[in-house]
Length: 562
Image (cartoon, rainbow, N blue to C red; front, side, top):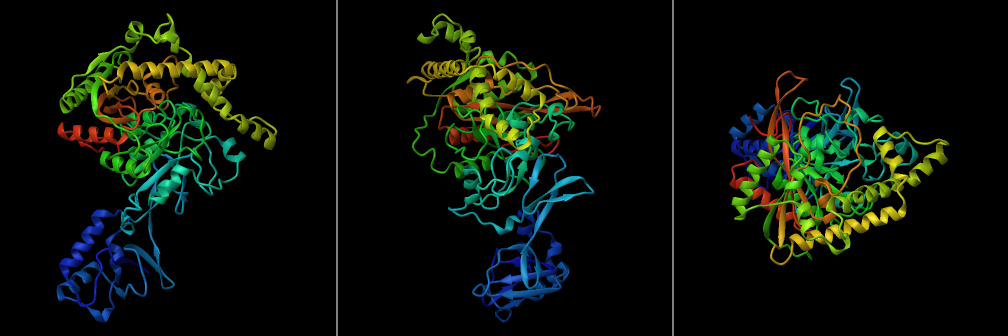
């Protein structure tokens, strides 16, 4: 038998069950929950008082008849406690009901609770529990929030794949959940599944994803790159309105790029505030968990719960300068830059500040750090990002390559872009890596002293994520080019500050797939000093509201209603 438990608005002795009370209760269920259906009203379990202690009015009985109620049960809470919402009654027990959603965009690797593969639709089905069963408390502020987790975080009982079949088969199921994911579970979040990524959290376009097919970007014509490496979390958040938050990771853009391309908010937190224990790391100096969502207020609430007390001892100064880094915007198309400048003007009006157009290269030339000598910014940092990041990334998987050889007496399969990067990284020496780190730290010190002195305080840097233009999933990417210097995606990691990706508009293009005009999502990056995470989200939300812009995006083809 199927039925629904009514104790979200509990009854009590001498209670009158009226038509109005019943209708309000059902309307509340329907508005809050996508698992509940009126068909569950065939049986109703009333919790709070015995049948002889309550009275159903005549109009209440008529409404129950229209609902199709065939049986009802009255339970006193002293004898049994049930959570509200839909259930299945089996052997006199009320069992929780979940709804199965097909993973039509191929974003997930594994489904939890319980995880079913539909052989007819050939799509993984993701089970989500009823939202009615959860109540937020001070101990569980994220109760019932549905979260998907990138498959480079360990989950107890599951194998971690990194989207590489050799890695998946080399290691047994994990015996412990990553610390930051356990923290989410402890505050009430529901982990519904694990999501795909570019293998080894590197950079892969869809044609380069060999072991596991790349997720499908839900925006525009549906055939655009989902970007990476947190491609699955980005695509899932952009595609599914039944999912609240996607967890990713970010080293040099892995969490921010999917936000940009899949049209959703994304947050790279202040470095170090989210623990990385149990996350497969590639470059510990930059690696951090990230999160993506469609609703900025929900993102802010999520961050406050996930961070816990990690920001309590940090002094956060108000924004006193807006920096437009002209060097980074040189490579961005005019339409995208125009959207970014329009939003920046709204930020200026909101903060009462005028932006400063600054060339970091020119500032360096005028007042370089003493350690740089006569080297230009480009020359000083040319190999710094590559030699540091690539060296650590390659050697982070030394043990995996050894373990795979011991188990199978052969080398693991590695996708072409990762193989190219690893082969180049093999030639980087430890001394070159250490020198690269030294230069990054010098750059960090120079930037902070140059732009955040006592007169400047906290700064808001307006960053492009990537140049947006059609990037079809069936087209091979341009030849691989090693990163040089301090790029727009490297600035935040080097400075250890938070960066918020904010969707601000769409750019039209003629799709070769659909044959009609489609619209690519456009986002902007807002970066501030370490510890400014919550302030940054508050600032963005209030600025968007004041400008009459939405603070949430829709799932599906378009971010905003047409």
